[in-house]
Length: 636
Image (cartoon, rainbow, N blue to C red; front, side):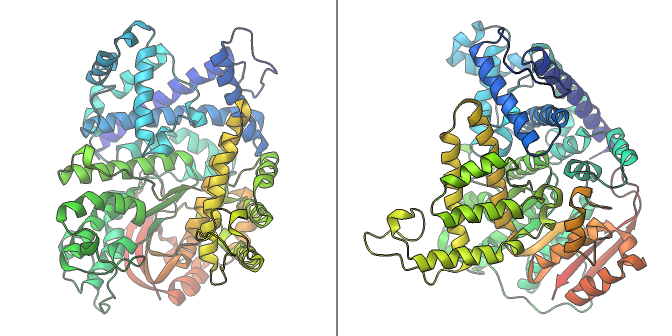
């Protein structure tokens, strides 16, 4: 994207952030008696309506939940304001991008005069009589509810960040910024949402963090300090020489990717052909995914791989033993399935910033919609995307009271103990993300719980959801392994979390929903960390890790603790399958400085082959004063 367009996005993002944060702070103080200092009135004011009282109880519950998790009262209020502002901005940026792709009738480009709203009021003319934009507000929330079916992480109105809505003047000012003529060219670009994410946090804010502390003091500072956009050519170079190389080797070079991958480097000692693999079984991970740039380009290559595998009958699905042609006999059936298969089965990403996960999930969903459009698949004929592989790395719930309350609802007791062990193992997930070796910490506990479960030979009616349905007799699960047991336990926990929220009421329901969301993300992260991947791609954080996690980080990565990016590479190699490929852009210091000698000897040289390296120098990462290199590794 050209610099003048990036500058326009930066100006708009900062202007809307200031506008919304001021608006929401004023609403909290003036309406709900919640001050930015963290002071909260004990009882709601008499001026509040019944609806406002309920909203206030949920706002207070959300802020209290964050304080129970360790934030100071002022920090908890500030986080609520910032998250609400960011979510509001992301949602309206998403609407603009949907409009530009013809996936949504114009909804905000002309405000209340937009054709989508005019058509909506034609069906419900009474909305226009409500005044003060109330009808328009209801219309937009209807759109959010429809979109939440597939992009829940961004559009879910049960999210605490949905409790506030900008009042008319602030709302119209926000739309004026987003509808500015200088932004008109950006909405059709897939990278636009990522640039809004990067520019939401200003350079001045990053500099202040660095001035106040040499090392990041918490997960937010670690995320903000390292929000640097990966240039498209670097993304292509790394993906072409990892995912592209893998498929080229599997097809012995007989693939369109050999020409399409313009940054592919032919090696003098080319490896022998790999055993073919069905594209549905490829797993790709970006362990610090930001707004999902690597995953978006992987989508492009995977689309080619699926088509070639179908045309030539290459590979069979590990789960079913069927080829793509067996599953989808007609080309039209394959084209209808490819986008959802890629999103649901191939692409995985983790980030410690919840708003980055919002954006990555949206970006990948939009890419899927574009693929369907390009294939001529009408919106009504597109399958629903049931889930994405984007996970927020947050600690399991930090509210001890709710942890205990939920654990008491779990039956049998072995599931309760397993959940408590998971909470303890995931304490630093928000600080360390995929660097946390939580799956290793739980190996013994999962094996113990499985053994106890098998030995008890539990009657089926006492443990619904585990094992096959049988009419009588004991469950014989003596052959179940740890992975199968954990999958069953995960399903059971998610069902119990849903019931836990449903059984709450009022402000307790709001706290329980936050608890359930955090717990579900923790379970999802643990599931991901138990996987192994064909390709790992990254632009990891540079420098020191969070001071909050320093003790655990240093103990976990004694050879690479001197810089976070070195530890990410070590962890990435560990998460690879044998012969898997890793692509990374990092500081070039790792190539020659003596402090990285152990990293080079014990990680790179001992565990991998270094296939390709590009020494790129300075000025590559927008705004980052660091010289970088990009390289691809092959795990032995």
